[in-house]
Length: 501
Image (cartoon, rainbow, N blue to C red; front, side, top):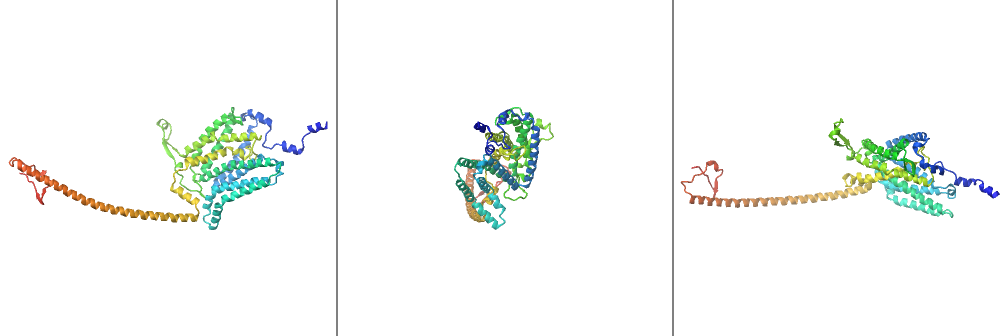
């Protein structure tokens, strides 16, 4: 009886805390089962959740606009902070408190790998811009140049140090958990830093190429929420039961329309379209290029008669914005579906609770991760000119070579150009001499030919006159009028003029 009573008694506090305590972002299994038929349009608490979501969205929008105004460097800092929160949420996903207590320093090891990866990724992306920023200070310039030169070696040995640390901290009966955390850490690094590297690259190519894709994803999320909120009746996918076909289609249309409007607005600000070649925070001025200069298209006659204008102005970047909007509305939502399936596999509602009404930062960045990679690939493939220009080569020289290497290149290039100029001059002089000799020769030859031809004509003329005098009766010979003779006939140095009879 005591055994039966003991078995029916609740478990120990330790086991209950470890096995049955639920986090704030988890939901019970029963809720998971009935959630398939729980649409947002039928939710009785939807107005309260919408109010919380709207307030937090306005707060995030205000902070984002402020950071956007501050410039490229602050936007990059914002991306780094978001990454840290995402890594924290993902690290905690598979962490077990009672086993972490037996592994002191294991969390520090995770963050060691994280910051090593950050140093490697951002060091490769921003090294050239950092060099361009510190060129005025020789001492700091040399220090930065040395760090950039040995940056890969430093990152490699930092990783090796973490790897050795992991091996030395392995404990018996904890191998499975430790290796699982090791693999999970590396997967987090791949997911987080892959999209963040492309995001930062888009920022320094021009804030436009970061802001437009991110805005399209935000518009798509908001439109899908409101269309599903008021009209959602047909479930879209089982992985995310609150997603509906009405929300998906309505969001696609709204995103496509917004792409033209946002591209037109963003394209008129040089602060957004100019690329940043260094890490300064000064204002930018540049030639916006043909992408941001309007092209005018005439309207058909049956349309122009109903409108006050005869043509419309379209920026070439509008067509690129259309392609980005199609990806943002059709393919990028699958990043959200993947995150929903991932959360269901671990029986959690959200990745975290950092943002009221939205969940964690990872919940907001699921579609952004897919979109950032596509935006960078699209920009490098279809927007950046593939042919090398003088400006591109100069920018590459300034960003890739040190100051001493640039001076050596300048001297070498000057020598090459000087040799080519001298060679061109000598070649030109030779051609001029050849042409003069040929011209004189051709002139003398032409004079000789002209003399020979004139001699033949005179000889034939004398024979013709002799024939006339011999066969024609002089009494019947009547000369033509005087105006017929324009020139005299040269014969043996004498001029014979014909006169009328």
